[in-house]
Length: 391
Image 1 (cartoon, rainbow, N blue to C red):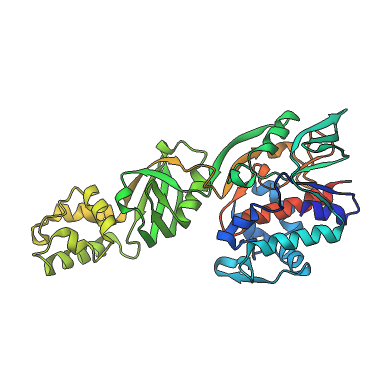
Image 2: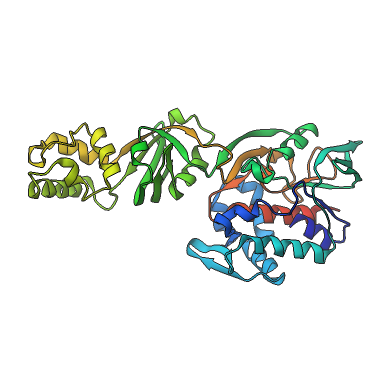
């Protein structure tokens, strides 16, 4: 987007790509389908930005989702919109998005150099002068860093942009995985079980950080799924030992109604074991977690369960505690949270305030959002602004 926009603005543009093909990361987004944006107005888009909302405000209004969709359609890509306003190529092939961007660059006159790794950006008198690459040096009046972050390093996102930024005097805020699974103690026996309508809540010092209804998945390491990815974006810069997370497995029932339901089930199936009766409420793997938390013997007969035990089971069903221990790594993270400090970048042009002719866009910047096409929209909006920002 940055290269195409700069070329359309009348500049001679060389796109340097260290991989053997363009858009390698796009191929794996949206499970190979590429959720390229979210069809919502700028204000709603900004509400889904976790960090950098103020910085991105101008870009969000100047090049919103509607502009991304128009751009793609004008260059031959047929789109469709699915649940949650997520926009995909109608073909369900991420490769078609890459081909569209390649076509747009070619039509705009961009020169592409593949298998060309940038080694260093040279400056003179506080301005960009040249780029040293694995296949020779290139003089330049302006350089746009669109290197991505650290997520999915196998696609080439190995933090090069952060290194260049630091070498040129920029502050790079600590980078952590975002939109990623969370490791948790003592839940592995429920691995592979998905819970569709649960409420995941996280608090720190009594303050509610996150509380949403949705789907989560128990894994061999802890928890994942849509709710968990969103939670990770909120807590990824906090000490997880200070985050108290819990799951409400039965959000449709308050404690009183749930207790009545449980009492009814236990009474009507009095000769069965508690664990069998509980399977009417939850899958077996989760039942064992809940009963353990409630300190209730799963083998005990239902008609022998005391009122106190029943109360503990209800509490465990309504607020099952999760002991979060760590984020999963960058190799599994959808995006990187952290990056080049936004105070050092002009939000209108995306130009460095420290080096003339140096521009930034996309994930290399310290801004990130929730899932749903919002992070790619950040890339397209800031890429457009950077391409336009070159004088």
